Amino acid sequence: MMSPVDQADQNDPQDMIRTHLAALKRAGLQRRLRHLGGAPGPRINVDGRSVLLLCSNNYLGLATDDRLKQAAQAAISTYGCGATGSRLISGNLEPYERLELDLAAFKGTESSLIFPSGYQANVGTVAALVGSRDVIFSDALNHASLIDGSRQSRAEMVTYNHCDPEDLEAKLKTHAAARRKLILTESVFSMDGDLAPLREICFLAKKYSALLLVDEAHATGIFGPNGAGLVSEYGLQPNVDIQMGTFSKALGSLGGYVAASREIIDYLLHRARSLIFSTGLPPAVLAASKAALQIVLEEPQRRLALWENVAHLRDGLARMGFDTSLSQSQILPVRLGDAQRTMAASRFLLHKGVFVQGVRPPTVPLGTARLRISPMAIHSEDDISTALTALESLQFALRQREKRLQQKSSLVPASENS
Ligand SMILES: *Cc1c(COP(=O)(O)O)cnc(C)c1O
Image 1: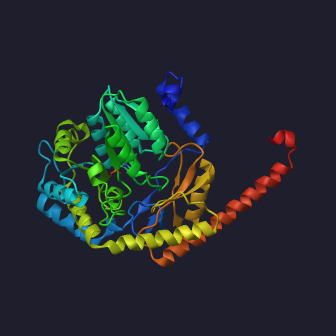
Image 2 (image 1 turned 90 degrees about the horizontal axis):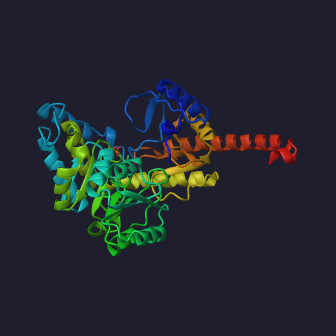
Image 3 (image 1 turned 90 degrees about the vertical axis):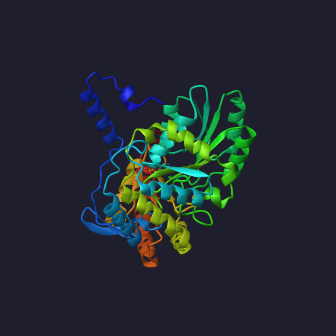
């Protein structure tokens, strides 16, 4: 697909920028950054007002946990604030090694490697593993970081239908002659909350001798007996070559990771440009991540509290007639289709004291704009009930609006209406 920048025929860059911004505005796709105040707990300050926070990836509430804060503060006292260089030069401070050992044990792999972010972990890893004579098989709804890594690799990119192992197999067969093959999938999809058919995908990876990378960004801390992710929940650690994830979501901190065999990790250390050419993470961040891993292991009750809130919210939404049946996780999308309608719904909820962001193209496919609702383990039952009351008013307002539109269109003669 051509980018808007390539499509624009203006010679003057300023003209191109102006035209592009105007087009975004017309399509209801303009974005702005909101001013968020205070800590991201069950509530947060949005534009000066305290509201319920229902669109954070801080699923377990760890970002504000005292133990993470203390670990971060202690690390600052010992090591200072910055890593001062790439990990391969001067930035590989002590907390890295400890965290990588803990992470490999958590994931059940020989080794692990921490990148500055999940985005960088995907871009660096995918681009290092395949090249121009290879083929990447990528789920149609994969995260932008997997797509950008694929582009950087210069391998041929073949997209298979979302969560469709039959289509994946058909495409693996078509490209059987490729030099190397790499399959990319998320385990919990970030915008739909559905789960990849990992058993089938593992089977196909083996059958067609493809490497398999599973992105556990939204599953880490949430799925699996110890919270290690969906790969662990299904017991598929030996079948997945690369388990990728991030400390920035349920773990409440920052940093991407790859857990894999010692050989793969050693190879990435030599080849992953996003690791080699970027400064290491601050020690405070690594220490907070280590504390978060410990809590995930020791406090399964956090996952239970999250699932209770998810069930409460999901049941309430279903009763109101919102369809969230696709989701099998803590991510509950309410699809409203149209981008402008979705943003109006988000504003409506904010007015009622509930912060839920609308997600629009290009983050999601055209015509599938949605409210992406995600509760946290630290929300109380009352918080969820408050959210449901606001959502009920939203449903009422949406229905009223539809009725008005129908009445209006029934006044127009049928010939003009089609
Ligand atoms: C958020 C996300 C990433 C990137 O992780 P960051 O640590 O935020 O850079 C990668 N993949 C998926 C599926 C994600 O949702």
